[in-house]
Image (cartoon, rainbow, N blue to C red; front, side, top):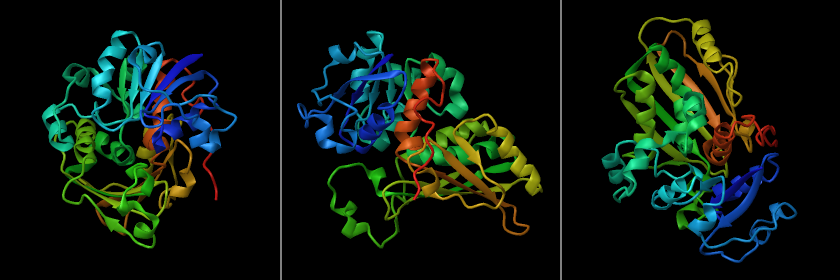
Length: 345
């Protein structure tokens, strides 16, 4: 059994990790930390976990965490980068679900996250945890930077188009929408049901922290510079992301060619589902599941290709993808603990 610790267990990502790992056949959760809730039984805070865990939240202790085979960080930015070097030196592998190790350019990271980075060495050595691109590197990684939720949906939708060189990389548009859980579990007036119910709005339209992460991944796929406009929106629902992506083809290309390109690219990916051309994937079709479901569209003879990409922001966009990365790191079946279908209704 793989002995696992979770740092930061009281947020939505932390409880989603606990939910998924509760039935994982190869994992024992040995420790879950929370400074604010230390001493409280996990099942008292999350009654859905009654009968699955006897653990109580504890203060984060690096020496105890270092006894784990792997530690997940489900913390705000700035926490993991201070603890990761010591854990790795002790032989513990890490999957960081925060943003601390996602961006290679640390000046860019500091600009968007408002603090200097404190672990430049590991920022350079971390493997970006998008399995559909970096599976082989993840196998050997000591530190995996789990992708953000929006970047996962956006990158997976654009990848086949950019890798093939079929589209103009200078003009990409990602119009994305997320449920309220993407903002975390903190008490914020702007996230109250009475504030977001029966409403819909864009936010971060002048610049969002996920933009440099998205750009970094798309530039790698394109093999050069890209121009990408990313605008997130808040939907009055709990879970889910839908990203509507727009790219212009360089030369005429048929529907069948485009559909075949996507189907071939993701043919062996257990968690990417390419739907028939013209389908409309729904967020509810991936709710609670580690899937990215997508479909292609094109209007009449327009050169613009439209990709609709949906994920559960807490699963494929966070905890599920982190467990997928753990499975790869330890040579387990990649789908272990992640095979359940989505929740409907």
